Image 1 (cartoon, rainbow, N blue to C red):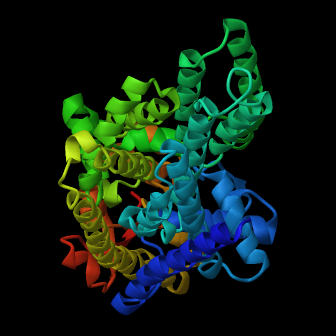
Image 2 (cartoon, rainbow, N blue to C red):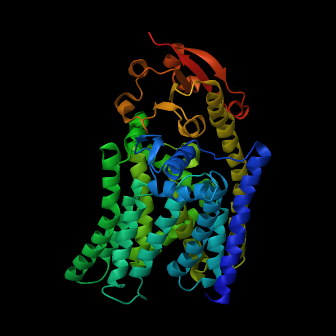
Length: 501
């Protein structure tokens, strides 16, 4: 590593620590540190059980495929071995991923725009300060790992397709095997990583080379992919008797009603998430870069653009949700930011467009910096509020269950993360993650009530408005005292004694 590269790496590492540290400090000042999503506790529970009991299970003795991201859960296991779980190790991972994302972004800028190396560091800085990504770094979820690996694959494809790269047709065959293997590995983070097969195939089809050579490379990439992906399918099959994790089916069933809206409206809702923040200033750059890539036949660059467009389309089609700051779309944010910033840098150096108005260049870049900092600040408050809601509702309720119910109690709940981690009670998962049998009637409260009766549930834990008919069948025994959920027009978590007929 050269001295310059070392200094850049050190700068980005420190900035990543400050950026994430600011969010953690905000949560501490607001209420207390924690995670902004209850699902983070699902990963922590799998990790703890694997570390302490040597089993892949959410409930002890009951192996299940309730973790969408087995690789992320595995990374969390180490924190329990060194006694830094659940918080410190997870936040260290978030810091490392944010730093790595910035390094890949800085290098990727140089790959995308070969003659503007002076702005490479700024590409990394932009990724470190983008509020969705900082929020993800402190979320305890796999989101940022997913975004990092996607960016690595797409930048790698651009490099392999670059005219500067030598080889048959472009790049060493071992690299194509490696990129296929990496895409297969990403499925262990989230199943939607399979969408990267699209840009891989695009670059192979559109790039130069004979059909025979392309087929050989496709076979090598396919073998690499299979080595990473097939064990993932077998893993799920062994645990749950299905090829995909339970969440793959449960989430789509729970939000199926949202698919009734027009597709174009759903798509725009997904796309809008990318421009909440500095993305709105980078949209012209993304558009410009798309046009220039078509003109230059830069198939690798276009592969990244088409992936973003297609990724939004898949979620608009199958899971058109926008809650929690668009958490399912956040893995596309690094690609959009890097491609958009690169396009903006290219656009600002077009003499035919800028001409004598050179003051526009620093003015636009300063505007980008100002907006990303402003939204970083707003994002810190949003993160702190999200953490406060989870801690004061889910975590405090789970602790109450642990201290006030019989250890043999059977608890029915929609949000099982903190309950599973802190209460250590047997659970019926109304969202279907570890109780997939409820998925066919996940929105049918009468069928759900019959299920609770049949299973012999003792308690129901939920926000009252989520299951109005179920709570009418039960007796209220506890309501959380959290002030943050009502502040956001939400409800307090409640516990009901379930009345069996």
